[in-house]
Length: 266
Image (cartoon, rainbow, N blue to C red):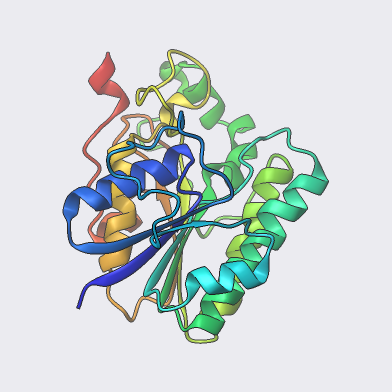
């Protein structure tokens, strides 16, 4: 039976990447949700359903009733809708990232959705970057880094940097609650996905870069993961030599195999 997949935030960068990746697989019944459609957006116009098509919902996730209608009869929701700005003010974060995420999770519960895969972020661990050896890694001072430097895992305390990353900590907590209600809730701490689809030339995000196809592959792995996987969190990075957040857990648990790395661009 073909799975019905609803992708929220489908007009954003990561949402559109996921849409195109899954669409190319030709094995899912895809539905997109966005609050607006911009013809100049990043989505491939040949693969995005037209606005009037029943597979595309123009919905603001702050409207619970509309989200519930979109969630009806879906097997999986891939929740990517959010305001991703690190400097976004609290009132926007509250509305779009916190109330919106609650609406998606609660609508999924009421609609009988089997699994929600939702965007968290590596930013929930961002303040580790002021500690050694991560500080030296981000500054490119590799001679200061021991060969067996410790990897940051999902079991370590979160250290969010701003309102945005704090909202993602709350999303992970809400997901845990809903997993106890019988839903499968899988969180993705996504690294630095960008439009150029290449690591930044400098700056702290380079070791935490994630290619577009690697984040899309991770979503597909989560869609196909064992139905008994009720709650988990995965860091989503490419196979970067100096990546210091744990991708081995995703390899072991759902078979994630990143295809790219920052070293490919050296």
